[in-house]
Picture 1 (tube, each protein chain N blue to C red):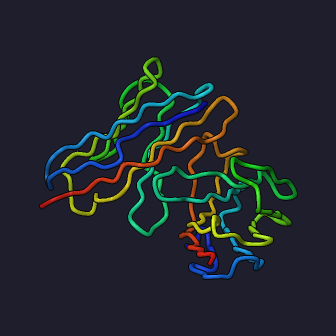
Picture 2: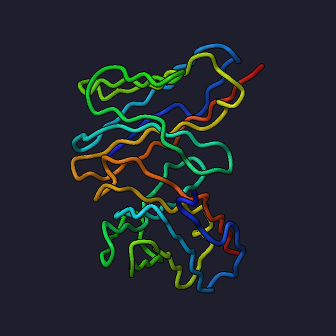
Picture 3: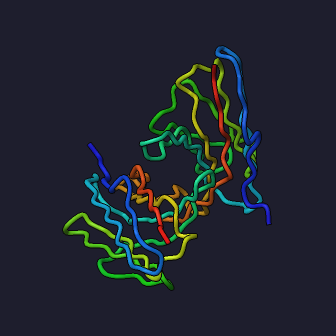
Amino acid sequence: GQNIDQPTEMTATEGAIVQINCTYQTSGFNGLFWYQQHAGEAPTFLSYNVLDGLEEKGRFSSFLSRSKGYSYLLLKELQMKDSASYLCAVTDSNYQLIWGAGTKLIIKP
Amino acid sequence: IAGITQAPTSQILAAGRRMTLRCTQDMRHNAMYWYRQDLGLGLRLIHYSNTAGTTGKGEVPDGYSVSRANTDDFPLTLASAVPSQTSVYFCASSDGETGGTGELFFGEGSRLTVL
């Protein structure tokens, strides 16, 4: 079956750096997405990786290794507003999106 | 900028009742989707539509139906609600045919409780 694994919850300190990992086992691969979802709100797009390597966008970076079935989202200079759930999703060979259950990130002062 | 509008935002209904969740987008996106989100689980696709006039079944379609009469509207109907359909429902759209390689834009969600 198809599977995406992320940690359920992580805690980090304001101003620090946190890395959220995502591993996937899917039938084919056509790209990986990261979305941010604040409590009670809709998911919003953060990043998209289809080739190996690091994509940087401001304080957020996303890394992909297709051979390892692995991605991470790196958040730098954490702010309280970064407290949210982070969803990893993979597009399989049929271009269907497979979603992870999300990682709840708690930021402490 | 409206984007995607869902209604109602919240609803409590009795088991066995019929319910339609409305979804309207103003971005002229071809593809639209209905997901449900339950605690501890990833978003699960209920139904999708690649373009007006066509619909398809997702991962968890049983008990739900959709229609796509035009580009903008994509209502989701529960013919006879059951308690297991208690969930938060998200409508989404993308400008890609399947959404698989395109960013999804989500509505604010409809929280449904079936008693």
